[in-house]
Length: 72
Image 1: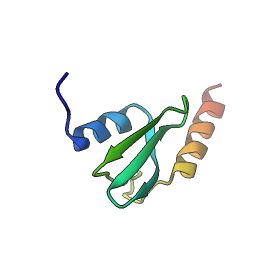
Image 2: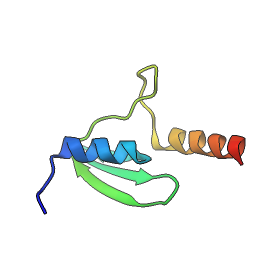
Image 3: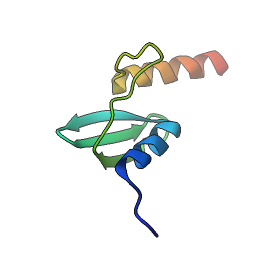
């Protein structure tokens, strides 16, 4: 299996429901709010909302809970 670039990995994670949980330097931990799966990544990019402001892990959890309440 060929290695993939960190930027590509981060794009894949963000597209599949992962959010930035915490970071230190160039190291970042992404967590899937629904499944609880944690993935370490390097050379991270801050997740932003539609207006360009940063989204924290806890804000992402609140957004996911709101969506599930509306649909469920």
